[in-house]
Image (tube, rainbow over all chains, first blue to last red):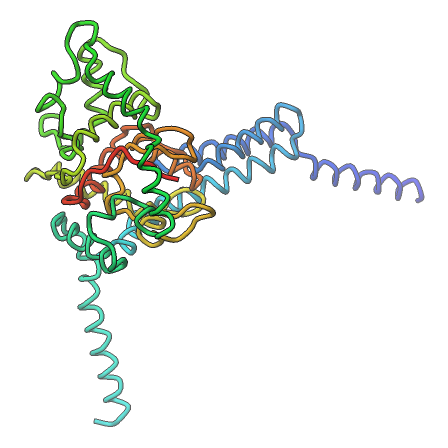
Length: 101
Length: 286
């Protein structure tokens, strides 16, 4: 009984650790998603400098094998790129609100 | 009619009249550069009633008495003088093939700054002075200059100097492509971009005369009449291209390439709405 409990606990801890630690594959997927969003912002002629610097930070962490940081930075970069896409799209009409008449 | 019905009828008629008026708020969909220019200039002269129209070309120096005094002192030994001298020398020195800049421009390049940018009907695009200068170089077998560095600033400084006092005179030909370029320039001017969510108008229409950190913001009216400028912040000269690209990066937007269509159109719009104001370049700014 005792052995079974310990075994179950070890299994739980192992699973929890696996859920927390990001892998290289997680980083590559997150980075690719961020890069794709930033490319779309580029096609709208509205990239942000902060997206580029956050993408660089993700790559630097990924190259150093720190995949937790790399994934976090890539997700941040993707959020920034998506915000720039939203801005470019909404401004297609909203710019008129600021015009002098 | 019961009071409740009367109230409803009044509410419906009010809603309908608001709807009827709504389209006029965006009557901007019709492209009318002359009306835009009149409204643009009126906005600034109403906002700064003490300023004469021609004073707007002095940017932040027109907004504040202390700064104006600083500017008058600066003009005694203007920081752009070295660039102006260099520009004159470059302009008059022949290319390797014996031709010179004068051969590329109307009136041999003297006193013509106020006509740039213009819409080139053959190309179907806006041509700025900086672009025309590099095209002149390339047509004569010379390498083009960087649009944001000293040589281009020196050349445009000299050409602006020979046009000082002449009113900006940008033409929009009766060509739908020219109107479209103008309209796109206007759209760029008012479009928010960058992580800071600023448009050109955020600083130069909504806040001229206000400080952004230590800087006093210049009004958009006449802002290009003073180009190129010596900026103390840059410790050097800057072209219109440099001004546009640094504005973009300051608001955390990735700048486009100098002389991309967007910047050419922006220069066209911004110069047109300053028609009638004198060329004052080269200028000096804090």
